Length: 107
Image: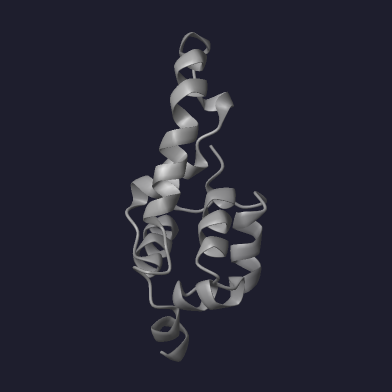
């Protein structure tokens, strides 16, 4: 599971810079960068903050973060069949339509 890559993918989908997200989450830009690159693991508190700022349920982060290595060998066939659709649906729930970047930046 790669939470950092999931955060980065969602942040980019919403056209938010690292600096903007870090500031709203009360993190340094360096810390967020380290999370996104996998150098640092985010705490549950940080994940909650990010989801709150992005206005998404935490489950979206976990769905997007899932990787084939997380799946038991006996379930790989089902994973390969179903996961691409589930991930696509999760990312469709993340859109700039539900998120006001203007409101976020102007605060």
